[in-house]
Image (cartoon, rainbow, N blue to C red; front, side, top):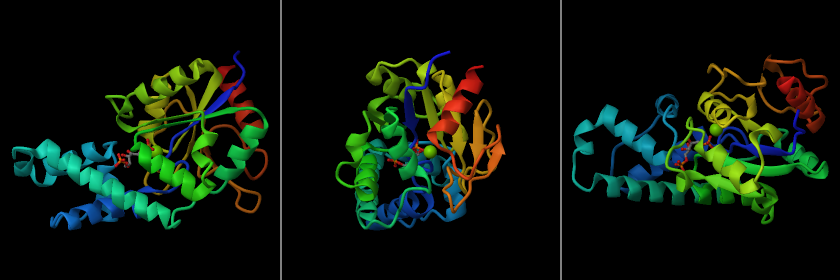
Length: 256
Ligand code: XBP
Ligand code: MG
């Protein structure tokens, strides 16, 4: 059995609850700035989240609500421009500091580093967004705490394809058997499992009712001393929060 050597974190929904009050708001700001009357409600955005990747999500929305627009010449360039504007709005929003890390994330990162675990990120979102989130929450050194930030279009196929996790593993030169992924969504679990990784899930409002087939454990969060986590599926949690010892035990059990 391989020993746990690295944690590979998803970003949106896992490190921070960025979707409803972050990405969604930024998409709507970009639409308004472009003079479009498109507006994604909290519920509609939940449906559109089935498609990962912002450009891909805009395209999906158009195919459902404005199929004629998809036929227009230069539509690919227009989507790229809209998405670039969305990224600018999103980064500006993060810089206000209004989106914190989820409970337990900072603690687990500190503990993992102290115990010599290597850290990586594998996400569908745009690289600038990851840097902005990590700087806003962990300070200027935040991004450097991760050995690799595999993000966005660096791979052609986004989650649920396994490519972004495989990319992170290749850069770290580690086998999947030595790493654990942390995810929040069914698409993320499929991507991680497809890359051969064990995965622990922390759900959020958008993903709570999804199926996490193949996950080692599903919880409502990592938890803190004063904010205990609840296991939704999987092994018992001894204590209020998920720590490195917990992850090591679950990881060893999963490979049993
Ligand atoms: C979540 C995503 C992203 C974000 C939006 O990624 O699917 O598309 O919703 O970011 P993950 P972009 O959970 O893998 O971090 O607009 O930059 O794609
Ligand atoms: Mg996610």
